[in-house]
Image (cartoon, rainbow, N blue to C red; front, side):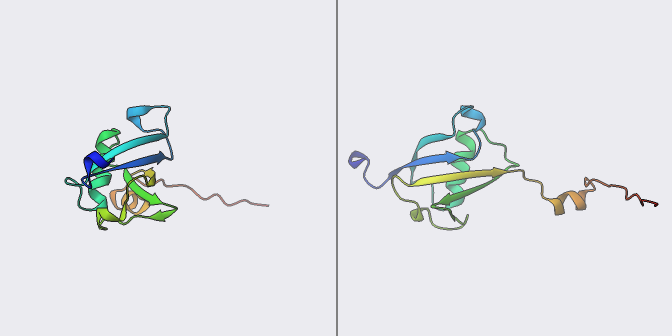
Length: 112
């Protein structure tokens, strides 16, 4: 890594589930150009694009089980860090309720 100086860092990514781009593989190395990433959200965008995740999915990054806020400087991530990548659906229960996509159930009274 000395040849690259401080412009690049190498990260080991651990996915909760295999990403679409590398089905069957939950671990991967990623070389990150610090000139293109200023905050953690930029790193999330790189991961989302490179591993073909949907734009509607929510990506959360963790180092040592600690959440990395989207607005935090990229320098919170260091060379050779282990980064856990957790993806979830982009639609929350509140969003479903507001859009009318929530499930409506019936309550049945049991009579003795």
